[in-house]
Image 1 (cartoon, chains in turn red, blue, orange, yellow):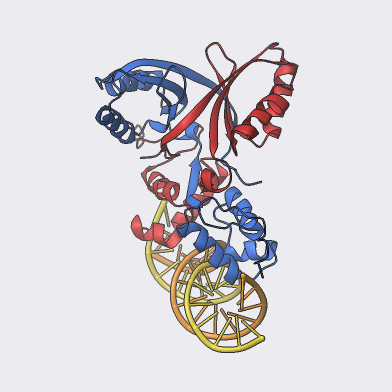
Image 2 (cartoon, rainbow over the protein chains, first blue to last red; image 1 turned 30 degrees about the horizontal axis):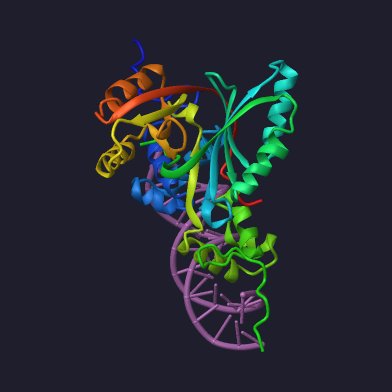
Length: 166
Length: 166
DNA sequence: ACTGAAAGACACAGACT
DNA sequence: AGTCTGTGTCTTTCAGT
């Protein structure tokens, strides 16, 4: 007799995330410092399986990081800028060199390779306009392979979340 | 006699962050589940002041959240899209209505009010192109005040961090 | 603002179902 | 895959410097 149909599961990377895992993730997303005991109370399970499931998700890379989010305006990073960059040259080595520059600059908190007229989109956090100008002229445009750069200034944050599991 | 000059401190919101606070933040940013004891060992302080400083920073809003970051590709959110929106009408009420829509849509993880030809920049996470198309047509463009919408697709994540304190 | 101590709560591993 | 139980460790508060 054929095996019964499996329960519906996320199986993208060979790792199955079931509903209990999702319930744990939901709670952890909103508060990384929640205790295992509190999670187990809320999802009606004892601490052992919760503990094991969290470890499994950490090892599988489902949980990437437990991060503390700091208010940027309170740590002298008042200015947020979206910065578009196109490269002059698109060889593999030129790309690697650019990526290393991106990684080395702490002002850049995010960088994506994008479709459209520009090659990359950067999110840059700076103390103020002077600091951003210094970043633009002396750090980013210093790289010879950087062609066009366009800056879009963020005037207000309407929404900012990292919650992916609902 | 005049009071002595204060030590150099962050004093933007009337809340002073000193070097010890910054050292605590540095550790917490990279691992929100680090124990207070481990922090106190690393910065050579007993647990009591570390505990008090963390509580103070939580209450002052310097620490916004302890977040668990989940790998988007492992929870069926493989597609990241940067989405630009301009509104037809810019009255206060129309703006509030749009912001409520933004807040209600879980696909939108970030939204910024920006300078330039568009009014807002959105970061949208979707399972795939079909799901994004559904979001675009049936959820975002459904709002009558939404004018132009332009989508830029993220092909690769080069850097993604939330670390502001170095 | 800090140290040290002490009570209670929690993490984590083991035996078992 | 889960419960229960025990041990060591951590959190959190309080007295004292």
